[in-house]
Length: 345
Image (tube, rainbow, N blue to C red; front, side):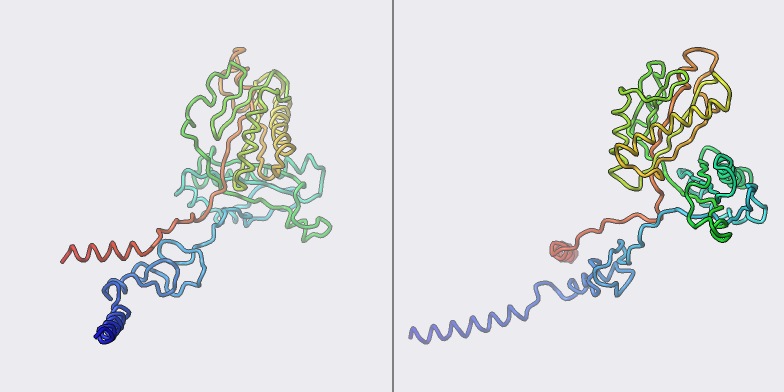
């Protein structure tokens, strides 16, 4: 009798186990609704791109993620030796760039001019700056781009991309490059950056810094170095970050002297960041404006004191795409879908 009962139990359990093995955990329509044929983490119902290569980075639609593209380029223009005016035939080549800038008003454009090694170094520095300015002027006058959205730089013969020993190389070095960036904004970006300038203290928020200077001085006081060091650490934390370092003076002295002095002030800050934090010079965009952009009237001591300054602005390279964080599809999604289906009956 015991043997018969045991045999019956074994047969029953075997049949029941077979039923369990054959019986799907969830209805077929629920399982099919969550099918992921190419195993990219996005269900077929939401997958815009089928057969995505396994292991690809993807967006929310299941398509291979476009690699982040930096907006850095060389202008498709050429300059003759010793010339800086942009021929009218090249104006139309700036249209696409102008349209982009018009549609994205938060962006800034950096324009950097270069020369070959023909001529004196000081002459080439001026020439390269004028080449950058010639393109900026077309964007401003022809396409209506605001002047304060464009920064122009001149590097002369200092950064060749080809050898200057051949005409082909020299032609390649007579160029202008561009880069689109976007300012980083602190939640306190509009508070106190330039206020309280009479205290001779650096004014700083997370992404902007103003350092004052004494009359005809360009040395950096030790009291201001911690602020600069914070900038250095910020630059180290993200290789896509750049900074503008722009020097200014009051109107004491000649214009040429003030331009040179303002540039020396800005270069001192750049040199400090390069020496202490190994920040590449290409990420430190230095300008010297002299007395051109005063904050306050120069007819008072207080006003002149506020105008003797270096302003630092933090920007980041503009990118064509941004990565998207995908939701994680796990077994709870099946449970949730089945529960909702049952409620709808």
